Image (cartoon, rainbow, N blue to C red):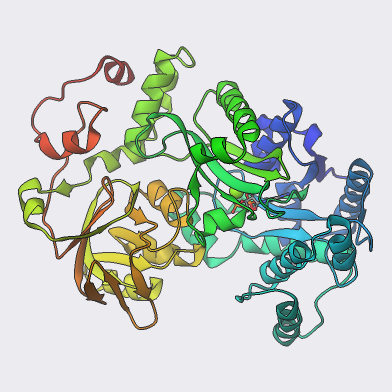
Length: 519
Ligand code: ADP
Ligand code: MG
């Protein structure tokens, strides 16, 4: 028998190739004694088997999955599909190289028409139970809709119409289908685009993590969030994150509601905040690098759902590497290795011509999600953005919020502007990774994607009109503001003005720590 399934306690951070980054880090956190909902990982080798075996999961692996499931039922004291108190799991993709949002993840798996009744009874919260079921069917069938119990019936009808069969009621069938869906998603168009952009080999495959659910959507002592141990845009020290009370994981990243800054958690749930801060610091010390974490609070109890070395802008990479040297966490050689050579090109992105900017008409301001300056013609969907870019236009992509399907359009754009979503929304994370300027969460804006116009600050901007975005200040301007070449920043205190003001030829003055990193 080839081992294909690993409990979280059987893994560690060194096993990325086999368990994927998410699985390896879940294992590491578990073994550090952190609060991680228990679960197991189906290895990337099983993904290779799946493709070799004509897109199917072989009997050997199936048996290992069901054995691990039985173990998980024992650990949680709950049965899969139980009509009184069902075990629910998430089925989470996780490749050896981080590809956030590019593949499928399914939450609340294990609900069916029977267990949802038990779940409602057990939690005393039918709204929450049906909301969870609704989310689950939605993720499974990739449908879009709103609202609860009657929607579930509609979802199931739609599912049947689309798939030609009833929505699977047997949780074990659901589980197998979900695992296959994750393996399949390795090969979806957006994942392929992302891999091409970052030179990630196709052969790696993805692992699948099956993890018991914790619920951030149980009421006002529950919530979910995403946080970085340092600022991923500037590298500044100090926790940087966002959360939503009474919400499930994907609500924060999906940018459906604009979240609260994490410091507000200190007021809402002070004990959770304190514990979170302590554990986050511990993780950073353990990995000796800035961490990007997902957490959920279920009725006052904190759980960590993910940690990874955080994606960051080139500026932040340099700042963080220098600070980690100053803090004695890493040495200078390691600091240099921490800077991705490709990312340095970001430091050379143009900024606005400050004189011209003074004359430009500012029409709004929102979150400075990814630095840089962008001016271009407005397009409202990925297809139009790609076509305009191919025709030689500079493009600014404007969306209510972005989702992984928008990746091609985001790639083609000079800048991205969204109406919803915070600093950790999909748009923000992907834009920072690509070194593309992004402003997110512009709630003052009214975006009509289908009609292809938006309104902001009393102006109506149509498809093809020029706007300009300053991703460092979050300011939005009318028209095509000219840019100037960038220079390497001298002082990290005031990066924006430093970058804009110092001509490229001037030999850069360096701070003590910057000199170290340049050794
Ligand atoms: P991605 O790789 O796209 O980030 P994830 O597997 O991390 O996808 O999951 C998407 C969202 O669902 C995240 O916000 C995560 O925190 C949440 N989530 C995943 N598993 C669980 C779980 N067992 N309980 C509660 N929330 C979960
Ligand atoms: Mg995640």
